[in-house]
Image (tube, rainbow, N blue to C red):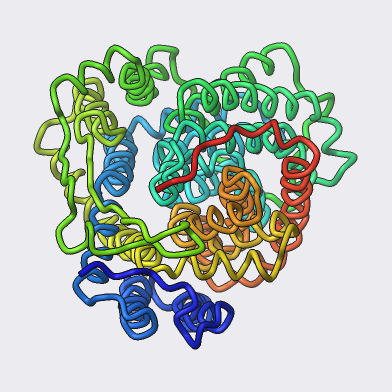
Length: 550
């Protein structure tokens, strides 16, 4: 017999029910922020607690609760985990071949001015790393590069955290935006357009803001032309790609455009005076490489862009659709047909369908894997070496994949149990039309807890959607605001700060960096809230509209 969701299951009280079913979120906060529990432990424990609450509070059938969790975990691993694994594999191949050192040197040799080097590495190149790898690699690699050039450790860590904001919703290979699409049912292309507006606007100012943080306003003005070139070229490319091609390539394409634009600009312009840190050490000598060497080093990522471009063409999509290259479970066992949505989400009880589909051949992760395989020939790596790198990559990510699967399993269970709807309805009652102010704050809190914009989308995406629908707002506004605000949480996330500290040798000084980045995070969050309010009440037509998910 089907089970009907009841959003006011405890004594008929919506707010009391919301208070109790919010316990998993509170537990996750306590586990990560207070107990500093590892994500691969906190995630499964939170999922287990959510299963218990779903059964005890909502009286959800145990079989359906377990099945919903499993559906979420499988969805988390394929396609999301597959994208992350293959992206990091491609990056690790370039490191193994030694070509990543050429990439670093090709960037570092363009200007002796530390402000310009920060624009090249902390902004443009870090954005590229976010697009192809994510998982902390952008901040870690960019900060280590700056240290190698002679930057002091603390400024290197702080400016890399500040600069690594515009590409985050689109890296690696669009995973955070794709996750929001998966959780809410809003098409990925629609989410990409909405987030693309936000992040293009932000990219215009972040390069200058980063330099301002680094040297102060007056010294930052001296490199304003370079900051504008870096930001405007990134913003234009990101906006165009996210608008016309979807969420997979904006960060990769825009970062390369930004790098190339800045490189060309520096051929004709340099700051009037070279600025360096008074206390910095001796800069490491940078070896210059030939154009052919640089082209070969960048070739894996050029291959990736070509393949991803092919994957996005209508011809390729039509060809894949005609050959049934996907895995499909039309009626997920133990769940499909067993859960009914209730009032006021629907006028009368309606089946909450459950199915699973993985377009394994057309998946971005498969394109990444093909690029990695082709790159082994260009990089002259043997099959044995490539397999060893793949095994190492899996070991490197195994705990992250466990965390990802458990958090997304939690998100799916929250949807099928009715928890997301209860919390969304409660937010609608408590905040009313002021909810757009809270949407980015919720995203920031999610990233602070989990260290991941992807996980924040899985946790709170449905809540944002349901709340917006019951307030008569565009759900695309609030779901994109969750991603937009979540980016600012990266500056203060314990995981992000730990990565930065490890990269620059400041382990044990995480509090110092947190105190520095907190104020910048709050400043940027206020700007985000202002933008979201304009989109909600002044220019609502600027965002695309998608039909409500089923």
